[in-house]
Length: 188
Image 1 (tube, rainbow, N blue to C red):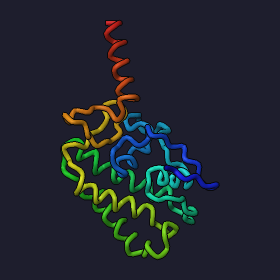
Image 2: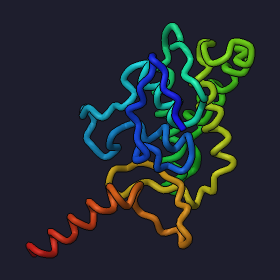
Image 3: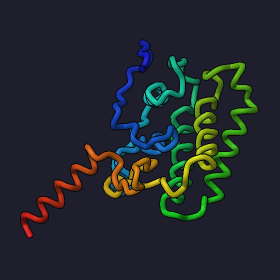
Image 4: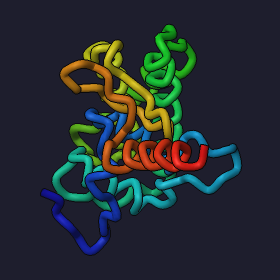
């Protein structure tokens, strides 16, 4: 259950959390990965967006005060590094060393910063926790079950029995794809 505070109003719905893992859901905080560069697809625009996403994703139970600076930029950097890593895994490629190394470094900095003493308000604590979760996921998620949606490009953990899930969500992308195929069949 999401606890609302006066500082945070989660705009996030269940449809934003279809990845099956915290880090895959983080990579999906871009509206549509298949749109051309330059399109406005960013869902993490402000510190409040980052905090409300973390709250809705279950990273913490109550939203802390936003850190002084850098939260949005650092969180987006972790997201894009995690995207590079898990997109490669979804395609059956090797884990790219540069973004994986950056995630390791960011996770290590967060641990050295003494996050346990300062709590979530410590500079870099949230991005470090997300980076640590990404590193852990590389070693714990089954690589053959990490997929990219054929319609929007979002990443997800395929937990279907047969391992043949193709869309991030059957109710959104799956339905749209079936409707597109149906329309194509009617016209041609």
